[in-house]
Image (cartoon, rainbow over all chains, first blue to last red; front, side):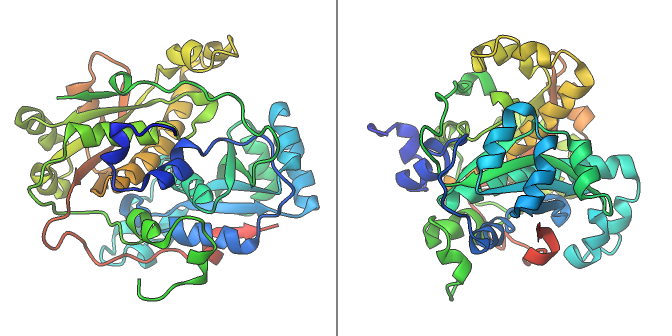
Length: 204
Length: 204
């Protein structure tokens, strides 16, 4: 940013960190060859795990696609337009909702022993899992940027196919696939417009 | 934090900002009397609007409950356990999904003229709206913390009732209500446990 907007100074977050996490961070479509380490993935999780979920449900699960073999299984399930960049990305992570998250509530929400039973009915539980997993995916994308890496989140893939291929033995539903790495050459498309404050926020 | 964990130094984000946004930030249940200004709300939006959504859909909409009259209409629709803290919060924001977000796509995704038609079918469109709004709610909560404020996000409210009371004339579906302010006295419950890295992340 070459000029300072009044909205930047109304925040406590330093302007360079505003840039790192939001303003200069961009959805990458092209990555350098630099590897993303297991240590970086762990650091991202250990940071974003603290952000809040309803009743501390924490339904997010992550499958890190690191090996060529795993990437080979994933690629045909990506939408055609997402295949080449996913193949080239140093690391790809499938972010999924554990729809049986309620099994963990005796551990995660111990002061309310009935918490698990609140979610005994499946359709409502799936909704709660999806909403909270999506919140956590938002935190995760910010966490990737906090590691100085670019994220390329995608919803264009065959989610049922991914679940069948990778999660046949467990109740995980994939929601978003994210490519992660250092940006390569010409990594960005032109920045797309954002809705104005007045289009989004109303005050009563 | 009194000790530095290896996971902190693997991130580019400075440790004090890690604390501000994730580690020391907490879900507040009690706020000081200090007001949250319109300028702060605008600054939060102007920051988090840059974070990514699928096909730049940006379905998040926000209703800021500032007046006593608006608060009086909201309170009976909150779950009983959320009512007193919502009444006491300096500002409350209803975060909702615009399920007709696709009407904006000619403006928001101009290089693909068929974008709007991809979402012509309602059930699928509602799913996309909810997923992307939830991502944006995750960004918004981080944005509240970036403003040096505490967020108290809640899903315990009568969402259909809120939609009927506030959004009868438009296609907005409320997903999360967030109290915002400076923390008051004894604002936190004890920190609840988080799932370990090995419970959440698998690598192939």
